Image (cartoon, rainbow, N blue to C red):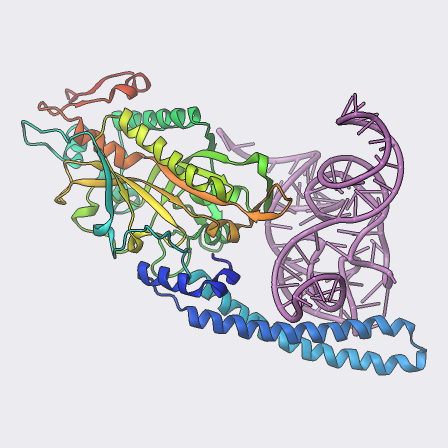
Length: 426
RNA sequence: GGAGAGAUGGCUGAGUGGUUGAAAGCGGCGGUCUUGAAAACCGUUGAGCCCUUUCGGGUUCCGGGGGUUCGAAUCCCUCUCUCUCCGCCA
């Protein structure tokens, strides 16, 4: 959420962001609601002041005079109640409108409507040339008995799966490996609740309700399954005032992700690429505004280090205006080479690092006391260290051998206790 | 799941219907003292919103929501959370 005063003073900047992102948000309506709310509030304040004056006066009055003023107070309070109701209604509309306004954009944001217009910043490693016809991870997962989509569908529906055998070890190894690297960079490990309250969801910028919501809500409770650990970790310090000396706070969390992915289908979502449940390791930082840019770079650096150590070919993307989430001011993705993908470029997104500036912290109410003892909103940044299922599929596809076996990346061998996944003799 | 106790400012903790936005202590900030620091002493110190050039003024907020009353931190209802005991359980 932006600051309403910022919107009032920089209306054109906000309009530009809305236009460049191509989102549906009406600033004029918001401003109209704001001024309507203000005028109601002003007269409400005036009436309350009068009511308080009357209440204070009564104990000083003679018994004979009291009745008259008690009646006056009662009458005034009826008018106040009516105004309060009006104020509630307008405020609700105003709050709703505020939620539709996205973060602003830095001036160097690439212009574009969709992920097609994201900009390649750099590329690491040249994709391998196969001297045989490579299989995709679905085939590999089946032939090596690593992933069972049929069983997942039977138990939980389509787009659920069981991991089996070395796929389980590989996932666990990736978790430990990435946690360890993040720890070395000063990130504190967390395992979070897998559900969160609506206020935390909306504070982080997620919407649990509505047709397009990507969130599973729990029937009859004010709880939803989390779509990323960004949600509970963002909520961890909500309603707190931090000391500047505590910042930056750096967290790395095991992130269980539950997503409805309503309407997402087709070749691009084949196999493990787009599923209802997966895990990742998530990086999160809480910083002062000054530190934001450096923290963003640091998160990206950790991400790149992980994929470099895994020796997977990747490219770093700067995300264009139209492909940014509402909370993100600036965002980088890492895309890994996945030879089994059907798209032309065969790179698939595995991480995403966002600088959300104070957009989340304003809703979550996370502040810090600066050197002048002034309270300011913190910046929040988040990024995927490793998307486990997508990295798993990238490893299967990149490390496959002519004989159908899969080599294990060197950095994972100690965690796995083996260096190769071979066909089991049945 | 049952029974009880509680939730007050950055923290501890008073406060059961009318200058209580809130005692006291701690912490923070400013000052006196000191070569410097500590101690001591003095002063100051919650947040949001609105009006105001400044000074200042108004309003809301004592876990959340609702109610009683001219007036609620204080009374009533309800929800959430914490603690103790019992039950259940990995």
